[in-house]
Image (tube, rainbow, N blue to C red; front, side, top):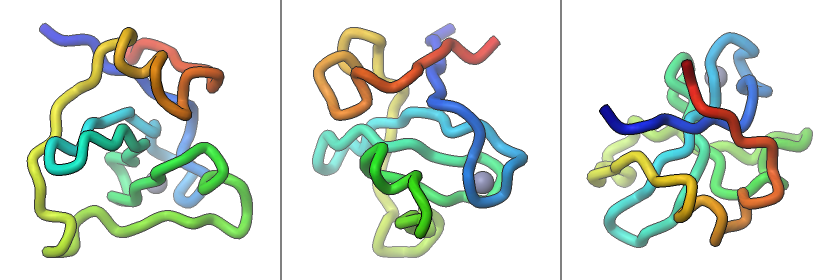
Length: 86
Ligand SMILES: [Zn+2]
């Protein structure tokens, strides 16, 4: 089973974890809330006013996979608090 990494609680709904996901169409690693389906491309997008995008829209219809800790360490999320989802 692959590991999941999150960068804290969703600042929008305050219910879901922001799970890091890799967009396989452009290789971006972004944070995705599984509760409200918002995505955040960079840590700055998590700061009010929030700059999230609704991941369920058709134009965001792409394949994703769970990035490894090594891959995360090479992105803008590297210095963010990343924890493994239990
Ligand atoms: Zn949310």
